[in-house]
Amino acid sequence: MTDLDLWPIGNCQVSALVDRAGRFVWGCVPRVDGDPLFSALVGGVEPTADEATGFWAIELEGCVSVEQSYRRNTPILVSRHTDGDGNAIEVIDFCPYFRRKGRTYRPVAYARIVRPLAGSPRIRVRLRPTCGWGGGCGQRIGGSNHIRYQLAQMTMRLTTTAPVGMVHEERAFRIERPLHFFLGPDESFDSDIAATLDAMLTETDGEWREWVRGLAIPLEWQEVVIRCAISLKLCQHEETGAIVAALTTSIPEHAGSQRNWDYRYCWIRDAYYTVQALNRLGALDVLEGYLVYLRNIVDGARGGHIQPLYGVLGEAVLEERFAEALTGYRGMGPVRVGNQAYEQVQHDAYGQIVLSNTQAFFDQRLFRMAGVEDFEALEKVGERAWEYHNQPDAGLWELRTRQSVHTYSAAMCWAACDRLANAAQALGIEARRAFWQDRADLIRVRIEKEAWREGTRRMSATFAGDDLDASLIQLLDLRFFSPDDPRFVGTLEAVEAGLRRGSHMLRYATEDDFGLPETAFNVCTFWLIEALHFTGRSADARALFEEMLSRRTAAGLLSEDIDPLTGELWGNYPQTYSLVGMINCAVLLSKPWSSIR
View 1 (tube, rainbow, N blue to C red):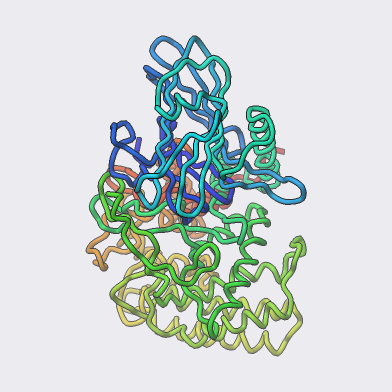
View 2 (cartoon, rainbow, N blue to C red; view 1 turned 45 degrees about the horizontal axis):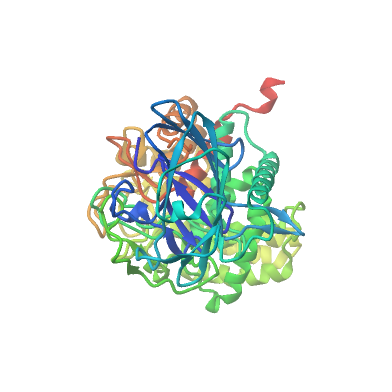
């Protein structure tokens, strides 16, 4: 078990992470990049301590075991608590999410339903939210069935059928009937609380099952793919279509590393990989929402310049600061809010903008296909890709103190021009097709010349150096190289020999701004699995994929990083890259449905 053995719930507006004791230990309002109402995950103090804050626990007295599982094909979590005498309760946790009156109901709210299952169970409710990044919240009882919590941006109200005084003073009491808790906006219920939450549960359950029913999943590893797809959807802020890289901030890449980053924003790169994976499952709603977000980003880009990341509302400035009141995950600070990487130059973003949009020129299932106006807007991005394809940048690993001409970034710029040519062909604009294809061909020639190392018969991660980097494997996914191209085969052999550590892949094995990396980057291992399959080592690919699946949390998910020696998970969680890797490899390696007919 790892401290990151956490269960996400959410509704594409807010989310929460629930630990193995059934406690909410992370969750921000009024959206994923907001103030953590539940901050215990990075508070540095165990929720069992008397002084602990930033969590919501519903505890069974004398509890000896907690069994947890999701309702089938949903992010609705069910936790069964049992004490030493056989008394038992069931806690159902969810965020309401369903269609109502022609629009999606996804409130800034968390719902919990507690049901007695056996004996005479006694429970204690401890709701200790934090405000202002680890500070205290003003609270007061407001009538017979609710408690208010005052945050800077909004007031939250706990409405419940449980005895309010017992909840407020954290006193234990016997539970003899189902109890309902709704922590949401400071609005009164105009209907029966229990009946309303029971109905919300039913409708939320149905909404998620219907969404999953529309996925085109592989025959093998179905549960893996479904859980990853649901979790990726939870990473989308549906209001704008933005897709965040992870639901958390400041989980270190390894112990004491200071590599603590805030991932609750929309990286153009991460979002591209997310929609690419979900497109393979037919989840077009996520793609369509993200394309709306991207069109707004492109419209607002100054002269075509694209930042590596933006806020979920499209904010361009994400100043990085420390949350001093929070001591960090397992006491390993700092806790960062914001991400200074928004100031970096990362030229691969131009390719990912175009790649994310390309499908819209071809896919007739979309409500809104892309047209000439969209193509002309993307051409501005393509011009930047052409202009900067051979210029230094921070690279996809976001190095903070050095720049190089990165092969991956240049290849993404090539892909931007190549896919613009494809889009122009779909629109029947032959002159523009030829224009962009010529530019793509010129970039290809430059990459093949500048990044190739004849002495070692492989590509370098940078034009000027002789570097190994796992991103070189992506030259296959981008269709820059075919799997039987000797240049790719040689590059793959070198990358695997230099960066593979047992069953895991490092991003790189050289010192960066913080010294030598100690953990492997999970998505790089999935890139390796794909490459092994395409180069004829399918048995090795399947074995390595099964090994990676064995590293998942009980919720079926992965974080960003893993210790190659101990298997312990590190980094922000759940992380879109890692979920994408599981989906892509399952789709690639699975036996076809026709094999069972």
